[in-house]
Image (tube, rainbow, N blue to C red; front, side, top):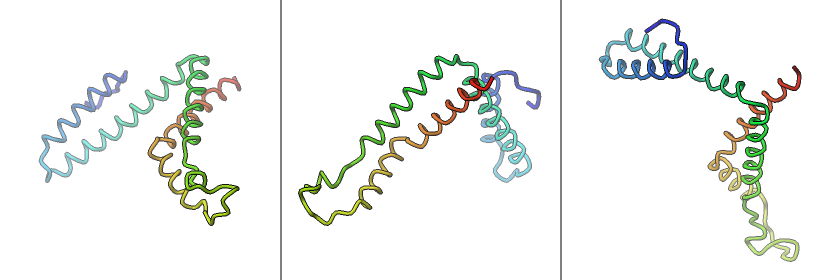
Length: 136
């Protein structure tokens, strides 16, 4: 179980074995559980490295296409927010006493629920890979 792992399938197989071993290990066997958790963490980190490597193996054009799609996705998320002034009948003709604090909080929650953070992280990763390729 401690030999070097060569591919993602092998990592996933070993992760499954570790999870099975954790489930079979008594909860009071702290040393064994600690060793299994340590191996599980190492395998998860290794699996994450395979995902990064997969992106770096993709063509520049493929990455650009995904980047454009992700940027359109984040634009759609931000453009789908609420304009509570207009929805409440306010605006330049109203003279109402609306403040944008409520709108900001609602829109922020909507963005979080839409996965804006994950999309922005993906955009940053794609830009990082593309920038590195331009520097080569």
